[in-house]
Amino acid sequence: MVSNHGNRRFVIVVLIFMTCSVNAQSAHFYIAPNGNDAWSGTLSRPNETETDGPFASIQVAVEVARRTGIGTEQTIIVINGDYFLSKPIVLNAQDKGIKIIGLGEHKPVLYGGHPVTGWVRDGKIYWATVEGVKEGKWDFRALVVNGKLAPRARFPEQGSLAHESRFDVSWMSTTGGGWKRKPTIEELTTMQFRSGDLPVDLDPANAEITVYHMWDESLVGVKNLDHVNHTITFSNPSGHPPGAFGVRKYVVWNTKEGMTHPGQWFLDRTAGRIVYWPFPDEDMNTARVIAPTMEAILRLDNTEDVEIRGLRLTVTNTPLKAGGFGAGAFDGAVSVCRSRNCRLIDLEISHTAGQGICIRDGGGWIERSHIHDIGACGIKAPSCRIEDNYVHHIGRIYPSAIGIWGGGKSCIISHNEIHDTPYSAINCGGENHRIEYNKIYRAMLELHDGGAVYVFAGKNTVLRNNMAFDIPDTGGYGSSAYYLDERSADCIVEGNLSYGIQRPSHNHMAHGNTIRNNVFIFDGDMQLTFHKSDGFLFEDNVLFAEGKITFSFAPGAIDFRNNVLHSRIGQLLQDRLKDYSSEKTTAIPLSDDNKTEDPWIESWQSGWIIYSARSPVSAMGIKPVDVRGAGRDWK
Image 1 (cartoon, rainbow, N blue to C red):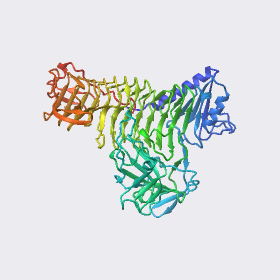
Image 2 (cartoon, rainbow, N blue to C red):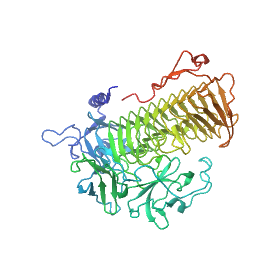
Image 3 (cartoon, rainbow, N blue to C red):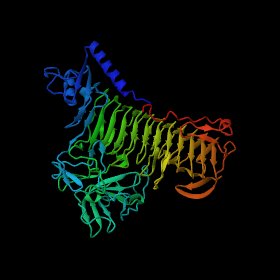
Image 4 (spheres, rainbow, N blue to C red):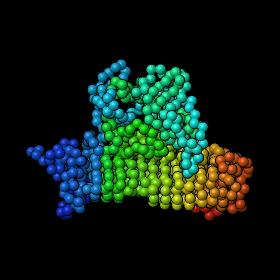
């Protein structure tokens, strides 16, 4: 499909001009790289005498627009180019109804940082002094080199190290209050490492450690490294104690020992410099290296009816702290708080340390945006319409990041394409949500206990016509296609496709939900789990597995009606549970309206399920599943 973004932006600008020409209560201002904040901003280019023309900065245009009075339709047009900001752009209650629109064949770029120059060669690596780092006034954990988010030095080069800390305390579930015993400060700030695992000259001032848990991680600094007692003391507390959930993985970042190949960097806080190992074809005299100086580029605070369209935002920072579930503690390149009816349209957000878009409350629309190569979540936006977005390669710094994180009330997450996420692609808790026509693949690549679509404590939520495929099981508490977790009730999972996912349906402490008219396909052993769950209706579904199919649930928890459940090897099993423990595995008892014969599925990868004439599906009155419309409408 050919992109029509440029045509749409042209039409938008023409409409702006038409509106301005007939409406005395409208005003528009221009921003350009060759602008001047002393000019009027009412011209798109400098005049012949260079005495008037566009502004140089968006914030000045916002301040001038405020002086025209509330009620005037304000439009700020940003002409294509690069804009390095010294501080975030802030919109507040005075800016109700303002529009900031990018103009040009390519989106104008807003940078939340500034270039780094003065590179000095030192063998195969280069370094550049950065003012304020040695003094502790400036710290960062992201660096963009020639338009790419450069990987930090990593030790070990691949995989992870195993620590010796234990935290043998029961997790009582989130609903049950978390840990049976609250962790102590010492348990949250110390970790025992194995003798010989860490270099003896590793610099604690530089080192940062990712401590892996089950569904999240903690990024911590190193306060002290004791090689005699094999103890690391953290400079900030972890979210869970090392060793919690039986997970003992960790990785060390930002040290010279982790510099093992070109493209890597680390911030040498002791020497006050950035150290970078360039690729063979990179010339550091001409390379564009940008370091972040702010956590958000555009802030909307206590405003409404604002529209932001056609901009690119890149390069932001995060503080050193544990991000918690979904890396939710961090801000976004676009940060929205206490604002209503705001529209974020046709944005590109990339190479940020924190979230791409973070809306904390108020609601709004996020549409047709491309969000990629992000340190934390792509979109975090409760009670919003999130439609037709392309989100991928997120969680580059914080692997607990979620592709699209909804929540609140009446959220619509529709027609998005999401892939390459280390944790869940979509997460949504709360009430009355619609999650439909999303295309999801290569999710759950690092962490555990999540899925393509993960619903926590969801009420009256509908998961419909989604397409999820090629999601691995990395161990731990596993990964799933469609997951209804604690206190999810009165939800409907229908018309969805899952293939290349061992556990298409996982349900935990969920009650009174319906799983209907889905197609689940797997080329090995398939599992469907209903831990501590009851009151489920499972009807009109088609399941096909090359291996066995196992349902894990307590007796009476599921009412099976009119399904086709086919195991190629003829093993359709019930794993009878008491709480989380298996009591007995037997052949699953099914009523006569359920079939175990081959459904004869001829094609499914396109999203259109095609059955042969021999299939029993049509005669059973099961509706055909067609999710070819899943995913974004633009390419």
